[in-house]
Length: 346
Image 1 (cartoon, rainbow, N blue to C red):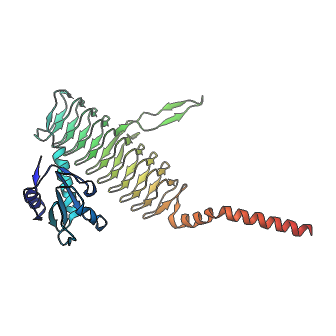
Image 2: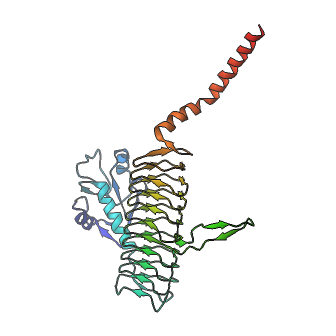
Image 3: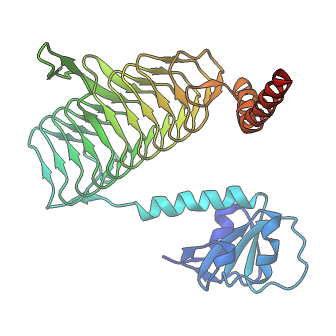
């Protein structure tokens, strides 16, 4: 699909500088610009690329002063960065705008699918008994939706997502490829003979509105009740959320975080990559957990911790300063011991 500079300027409330009929069909970085590409310039560090780029159209800030002639057609706007973000959103919506139900999908006769022209169900999708699918939802190939699952409106389930029975997905959620919602929680009871007996997991997972789940992330169903991901939470790729956990609203969790069962993580928390949480912990609202932290005790609201086991960030940095000096301190102690030994001999 092609757009002219004039059409783009109208969308962004911008002003064209150059040929209004210049056409573009793709987006590109300014340093990797090519003919037919649309790019933007917002960071002054990249200004020199404006005079070198092969991009056909470049969006720039309205009051940027040019140092020399530019080959590309320019579109001047109030904020180049936010305008380009708007175009990215439009481009993604256009790219993902599929509809219809593939003849290669399987939809159980008891499933309820909202009568909506915008719905999409791709090839080899399985929608099981009594499942409910909301309007505007896009379900890409090879997704499995179990019995009694409820999917809200305008949800995107990317290829290979698996949603076990009885789970609930709210409105405007995005689940990326390979994510698994509702697998059994890790519950086993040790027996006298040393073996482990599985504890049946009869709860579910509830994901509220506006949640995004990264690729290959797994969220386990609860033993009883619900594992919950509250509204607006953002969970990165390769995370593991254990059974009966609660992840608070607008909490952001980076890749490879592991949360053991029955943890309660508050609202508006930020969790760095590869952090780990022991089971049955409570993390207060607004807490910040550094990457690779090991959290083994409850955290008060607005805590900032790093390290494994985790410590208050300021205490950790003081401790790390001492730790980094241990080789020198050890050498000095050895020197002092030698001097003491020499004095004792005298």
